Image (cartoon, rainbow, N blue to C red; front, side):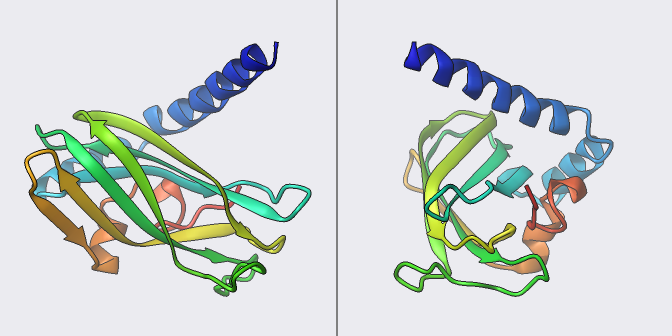
Length: 166
């Protein structure tokens, strides 16, 4: 019963994400720009969960692999923000920047990554992607550290340049 409930909730979340991105008026133009500037990925959603009872906040990302190569690992380094836009830290460990790694293979096309209890702080309302590291199956590595580049490969309604409130 528990597995069935988890499956139903997971499908509901995925449909919500797909529904929000597939009908985004910005998808076609942003994807075209990402392809034009030779970006390996497109960020379609990036968001935090509401804090759980212990203050744990999850972070999720929905992205698209734009290359005709399988990704072995993709690591998003993210930082949390409160409701007035100030960067905050986890109350456990005082960490701010966290590396969230998606393990592949990630085929060309859309992929979703969810990371549980990334931070513990009940004031977190959003998160911003600061860097992206991509390692392909053939060993090629691509590092994206330019904030403006990340803004250009994220849908405008994905959350204000990487920021997304729940």
